[in-house]
Length: 398
Ligand SMILES: [Zn+2]
Image (tube, rainbow, N blue to C red; front, side, top):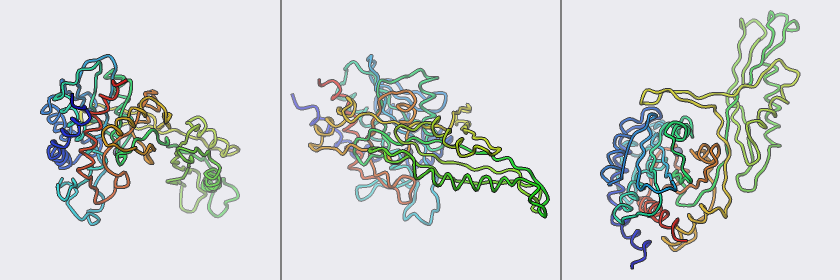
């Protein structure tokens, strides 16, 4: 019998133009967070055309395509919303053109990250064609609202759809490397309460801006001493906004607020990060507040969560990482780099919150994410589609 990986490579090559053209169609449909309706309709159509066993759109707007009905559950996730175009003057082509030329698909979302879903639709098509029938359910998920609130879509899938996979592949761009983690993040605000007095007699008041400024300088120092991790790097903290109020421009300010962007490395979590700030504001009339995200999805339902996106990693010798590495070697006769993302992904929910082992493998270079002139090599799409199909066979090889 012909080697399955050889077959998969041949098929993914045969579907080269099909995959590129599916991606082009997805890129041509603008899909900012909470406005994904049209792109989701197209993705659903593509899954149906590819012969998936079942395709539906859930209450939050996630497209969920299923192949197989085995006991173990694998989910392959790719978010379908993109960030906006930014300054059009920085683009040398039409960001919504979806042009295919010189071996690339061009446009917003080609890398971050409609390329992943385009590749997994082809993988599904190949699995059906190859008659894959092992004891496995595969959910191919085109998720929503990731750019605004990573992980929210997966909270919905686990809590409301009641789908809880045993493992997850995220198709965010990894340059075809195997990723196994990322730093977490959270957003906090600190409120400072002062006492106003006439600006001509500041000694009678308590200036909230001075309080906030002193704490801001302490936060700058805190950044220097945050925990370091060999794999994920250092935790970090910065202030992204400072806002103040005063009864008049001739008065002592009685209120100030700072907005904090905190990146969390291994060993850091919400409780630790809040405590650090509480230490810094001791002696001030001030309080720390965690923030919430809540928005209306295109389906009309309102859904949200706390803006806490926990750190996650899985060990380099974890079965899932090993399966990814072996799949890569079998297909491409080469050793993949095993690494991590710089940015945040839905892995913060699947692995960070629910503890479901998660890896990343996706087409495109992450440095083009959110940047002008975003484009993905068609070769990457072909390899990614082969990888997703090969992976499910590799799971059953031992
Ligand atoms: Zn992304």
